[in-house]
Image 1 (cartoon, helix red, strand yellow):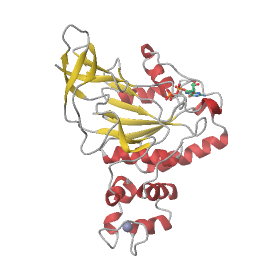
Image 2 (cartoon, rainbow, N blue to C red; image 1 turned 30 degrees about the vertical axis):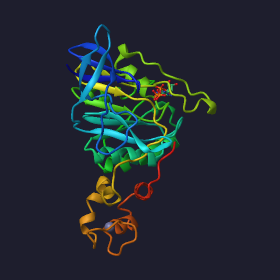
Image 3 (tube, rainbow, N blue to C red; image 1 turned 120 degrees about the vertical axis):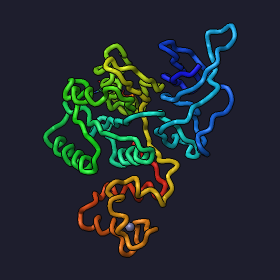
Image 4 (tube, helix red, strand yellow; image 1 turned 135 degrees about the vertical axis):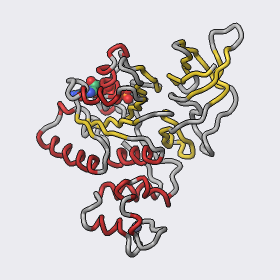
Amino acid sequence: MKGLVTKSTGSWYAVTVDDKSYECRIKGKFRTKDIKTTNPIAVGDWVDIELEPEQQTAVIVTLYDRKNYMIRKSVNLSKQAQIIAANIDQAYLVVTLASPPTSLGFIDRFLVTAEAYGIPASILFNKLDLFSQEGLEILADYRSIYEDLGYPCFEISALKGINIGDIEASLMQKITLISGHSGVGKSTLINRIIPEASLRTGKISDWSDRGKHTTTFAEMLPLSQGGYIIDTPGIQEFGVIDIEQQELGHFFPEMRALMHQCRFNNCRHINEPGCAVLAALAEGGIEPSRYDSYLSIYHGNDSRA
Ligand SMILES: Nc1nc2c(ncn2[C@@H]2O[C@H](COP(=O)(O)OP(=O)(O)OP(=O)(O)O)[C@@H](O)[C@H]2O)c(=O)[nH]1
Ligand SMILES: [Zn+2]
């Protein structure tokens, strides 16, 4: 029977076939290109399952080819990768400028991975209700960096219900991944959009609570207007994986637009003479924070919260 993986705990998977959900485990090996993954099957995957005799459970026996996926380097296991979700139409990164802050490096790593797999990405700036005047100015700066690159940005308060209608409209009939650090408000947002979901939301009250994950597994939730949201556990760190140094510039839209003007066609945009990217950086046509992220990813560094 062919079904859709709608929930994953890492060892068990819920697979939906014609509105019926089966608790499944994996049989055999499933490989993603040459990458070692901590989870061979991810939410959003299409699979074949076989019922186990005289039991309520089933086993996943086939994994169908994926249209795309979001992947990151696993924390502490730098050789291994985690597939966050597969077969998605768009990826929404929920960020906050405070409690907890999301770094530009983290945002850029997420966007580069989305570009590499052809997934349209948007940024949701949450907790708008907490912003001071100064905070709003920083928000406007961040927003303009990413909007100028073509990434849609939303300013919202999941808690107070501000600007949620715009997001709801953009989710219709689509499979949308919702990702971000722990505590940025993903569950609060999803609860507002799908009240029946009643996901647990956590209070991050002090330092010792930081990193406490209230969402522990990825889950695909149907929307009443059609489409799905994929809720994922909070991510501390986003390590880019499976991108060659030489192709990295292609996944920065502002660099992609200029690189054919570089003198050398194998330009790394680091110190080459006649580099159009470095010229644009010097003239303010490329954001220094974006170029910093390029260098940092190029040199294989991960982002930490
Ligand atoms: N002030 C304010 N607080 C918010 C907002 N959205 C969420 N919060 C609070 O932030 C805390 C974390 O929210 P969650 O929705 O649990 O965050 P999460 O991203 O789902 O976290 P994980 O499940 O750990 O990944 C809770 O105390 C929420 O009430 C918002 O728009 N404004
Ligand atoms: Zn160059």
